[in-house]
Length: 245
Length: 342
Image 1 (cartoon, rainbow over the protein chains, first blue to last red):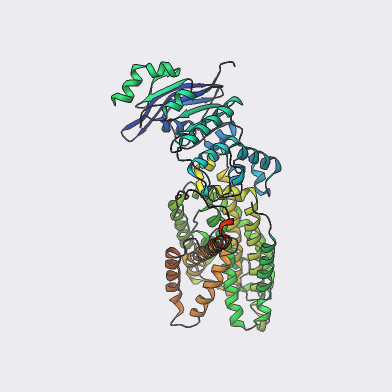
Image 2 (cartoon, each protein chain N blue to C red):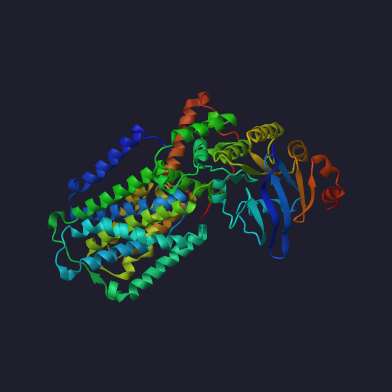
């Protein structure tokens, strides 16, 4: 696999009042990697996610995706360009069925607003994804009836409806049981082998060390280390950030 | 997206037949008069539900567009022009279309906001429109009021044409609501209602979905305003752009069940006749305001989701009880409460 940069984050900064949540975060995500983004609580990981995906406007700095600068990032346009994300709290559409949760994510031109029913191709893809994530038997139940872990899977599945090139996962393993963590890991690996690149924020260090390479470490909103899992683990600055507090 | 069920078709046929037959079965003028106002609110509430029920955006501006429709008809058919006959009814589609287009830039601005802020922005819009109705004397004649040519319909069945036109608009509103539920637009609106930020993150064009729905809802509202003006034949800013009209339609939707197809009709059937009966007696004329507040309390305390969803829940519970062991266990984990936009 040729190493090329898929996502480039350059000098991203954000202040909330007097607090610098992120200050000059700079890192890259290479095509074909599962890049980890870790750091102690409050180190700005989710803020970085929000700025990359257009939910939050950065004070300064810039983001490049597939070599092109993203001006005025907007979640909808980024999704259509192949960059999508999940949320820490496993956000789904609770009043909609699982199939609807997936089908709504298919980008369609504005003129298709009035199109009735679900196009067969979308229904087929939704069914496939639900089967793959072990949710096939719940296809016509409301997403609000799912367990938290199942919601995480559903959220992941719906992100894949758009056939993304880069997926940002915000704590895929938080709040779910160990069996579900294993499942989630397997799914991430499967999707990864199909050519999708990942940027993962995660607190479960075992999972991060197994899954991610390279790993970027943030502390107080700035990058303090970057590299292979073993190197990052041995890095004194990282130990200091996590243990020194 | 729900399939067309046989029971759904049966319910629709029964409801629409009953509504269409009503003025022919009950011919007393005062009864049909009540039916006219009931049908007016059924249409207004159904139109409001399209945006408010489906997308969760609480628009309080609808009465402003009701007023625009009323004043357009009043300007097109002034008293001096003689009896206009059916002509005001025939121009309604154009009035609806015009107002729908007019509402787009307004919606574009209003949709910069969400939740409570959106409700406040739209209610401000309502008061701006009311003030304009007082001040734009060339278009509204201000507080002096404006007459519309009185139709020469036969006295015995005077109300009937108004009722039937309002019924037609209501059916149109129900058809749009039904169609949207099953279309891509409906899914987009439901996604916006459940979690708008996430919908944007999944490529949903939330702006377009909201604007299109806003325009459809207000176009229908304006058409109804036009019929109302022609029916009462003399309009004043205070009653043509009346916050109580907005409150009435919102309350009916909440009572019947927001986001449901027939909830708005049910709400109108329950509230409007009571209001009109009270209005026939000078002492009790404004008592309906107390009725409104009582119903509001009832909905908030007992039926936060409205009658139809609550009854459906009860029925589902009853069914699963009578099925006993055969039914699969319900959700293993209680759903996490989602954020409710007031």
